[in-house]
Amino acid sequence: METVVVTRHPALVEYLREIGVKIEKVIDRATPEEVRGRHVYGVLPLHLAAEARLVTTVPLDVPAELRGQELTLEQVRQFAGAPRTYEVNWVW
Image (tube, rainbow, N blue to C red; front, side, top):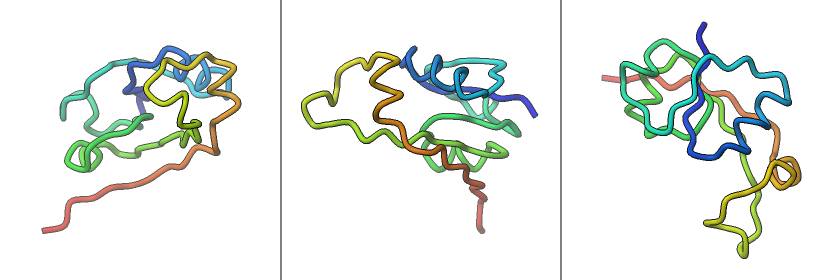
């Protein structure tokens, strides 16, 4: 299954590689076609998450004074929690 990372943050991409994630593609904005059937790392709106096969997030417990700033790799390491993987499905 192809792995896609959706983020605008280079340090997060570095961190994912560091923890062993094999990344095929990095994009900063997702379309349904780009995530459909893939394992996506990043934060997606539900309508896009439902297109992906799996969605993995890395929770970051960032202090208030650093929010909105670009984090370094060292800061991502410091604030990252364990990755969490979800399956999101459409229900009609």
